[in-house]
Image (cartoon, rainbow, N blue to C red; front, side, top):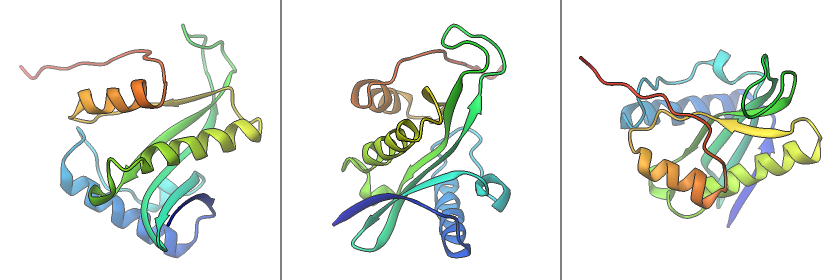
Length: 150
């Protein structure tokens, strides 16, 4: 049975999230991704997915305020910045990422801490990730940063 929920950071959870990020780094699926360290995770709101008692994914992020007015929101607007959303490869395409995202969105909405949820991605599989975030989660596209090595 799958359970999704917010967790308080413990040494055990910290170690597991760092191990997940080591696996993610080895996948080389994101441009420039490096494994997490304690400082990357401390102070973040953490949501986990557990399948039959085993953690199989996580999402973490924090609330910020817009430093300047943008085309999306005025200066000072509170938003929840998703720093990472990860699901173990063998558990992908089962709706777990969606459930993690929805749990975070609901928690942030219910506590009144933010008006928006935001994220950036550096995935190499941009077609799949845009389909996931735009088509499946209903997010809106704001901007893109592209590169070409010379």
